[in-house]
Amino acid sequence: MANENAQRSSLQRQLDSMNRRIQDHPLNSEKFTRARALVKESSVEDRVEVSATLREQGLPGVGAQMRMLALGLASLARLNRRRLRLENMLSELDAGGPN
Image 1 (cartoon, helix red, strand yellow):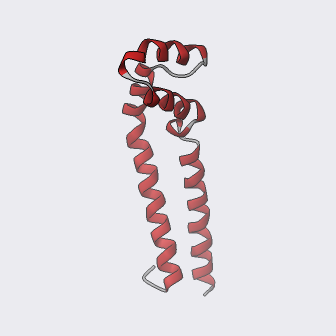
Image 2 (image 1 turned 180 degrees about the vertical axis):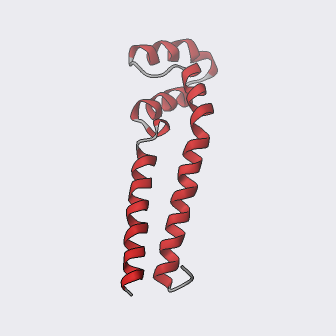
């Protein structure tokens, strides 16, 4: 029982750490999400205006966003897979399943 509690506590700490890392990931930053929303809401004809708005607000431009996506998606996916694995391990412990 003590070993199970220690394991649960360790897994929960790892999960908390993983959630913080996901939250702090550059693709989840406020600037990036605001920039993506501006681009998403615009039409193709408004791209020049959107680029100017992005610059004015100090947000990443379309090219920078594409680079961030290309470089950041794999690491964010990895973090999310680890998070899911930890959640599954905690669920198995709570259900009394295999360790």
